[in-house]
Length: 118
Length: 409
Ligand code: FES
Ligand SMILES: [Fe+2]
Image 1: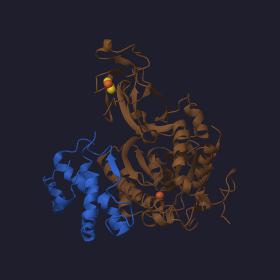
Image 2 (image 1 turned 180 degrees about the horizontal axis):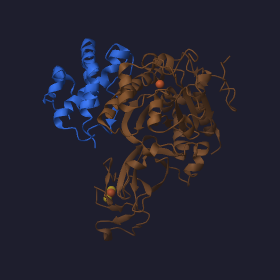
Image 3 (image 1 turned 90 degrees about the vertical axis):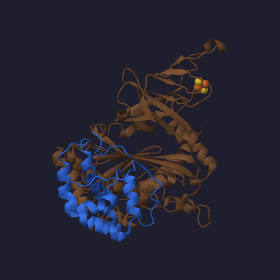
Image 4 (image 1 turned 45 degrees about the vertical axis):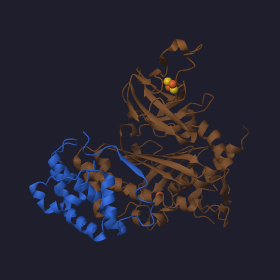
């Protein structure tokens, strides 16, 4: 599950390609780890780049049914998921982790359904 | 003096005295909880939809009973449950977590059992002495379902039926669409704290303003209700329900707005949820009586504690079960499962991703205090805690458990 994704983004989202290596990660845990490992400035930059593009991304991905997103478009889906996963760090906490919270790696989160499932 | 409404004084049997610490660590008290409470009540095991077809099974462990259980869908559609213990020499019969089989085969010496638990085949059976095949089948455990939720009961005597045990709650959710909701995610956490320490931390609403001050924003408080006082509380013999206040005028962050737009539901928002209601033709008045029982627009969600340890959340479009499993007096396992209507578009899943991360962040907040508090109980500073009216559910839990343990066996 942790293979790096090297597929480029669809052409109309080329402006976001600089974020693929860090953020197009296929699981919540990997995305959350990236949030924890990123300086706040990187989270803010990613957030600001993605926020105005979210509607275009979801519109693009909505041409496919869940479970049928082609491999070439998965990095875009994972970027959008990362945006949702890091938003609180920018909008609420103003730091990557939850202040005074339990160590983030202790709860085991199982994703039972994602857009990869039919 | 407590503010209105005074839930504590309104509840017969509850006093307003400090509540002692020792039930959070005492070994003898703990053992009695296991023997007299966990072994004698219905315990949440999963959902019927986890094993939809004949031959489907799940394996679930119950730490307080030191037991692993197989739940299997039978050919006639019913579900049976068995101890996952080989009647030969105690090996664990099924080691996967779920799957589909016609029979279970023990990996030690190859005894095999049907879906119904009956002993089917014993290799070299003639070498045994008067083997009683009936008595050496998988040992069954009572199992029953409610709202598509499965409960097992380890009681040595035949237990009271599930419906009777649910009491006032039995029909309170008739029509609630939990069976139509999909299991979206699970979170399992081991903590160094007594199971009640964790349950109490999740059940009362007093902590929301401080502990979730940033993450909850103005979702549970308003100018009219600055402390987020509960809409209502219902305290029963063993179970209880509470309804959380939700601020109809709450603000939303840009990501929360996107969550709503893509997924058509905001996790805590009654008014924003209206859009969701419209798309699903639901109105408060169509809800079963146990969901938003006060029929208030300023409602967030309800929590129903199915005694002893399963919190069942009802809300507009999502549900949660969260079980607090004792492992030892000062260690527990917390298992939360989140249910929602399955997204019908990729955008819906992207919306749910915000719900997911918010649930995770808030869980890190909720779990942050329990080990710190647990580790302080025997410092000698205090030996009891004072509880406000907002924490009446905590007082009720301690009251119910104490009463049960004081009863003659
Ligand atoms: S222990 Fe299972 S067959 Fe021997
Ligand atoms: Fe909380």
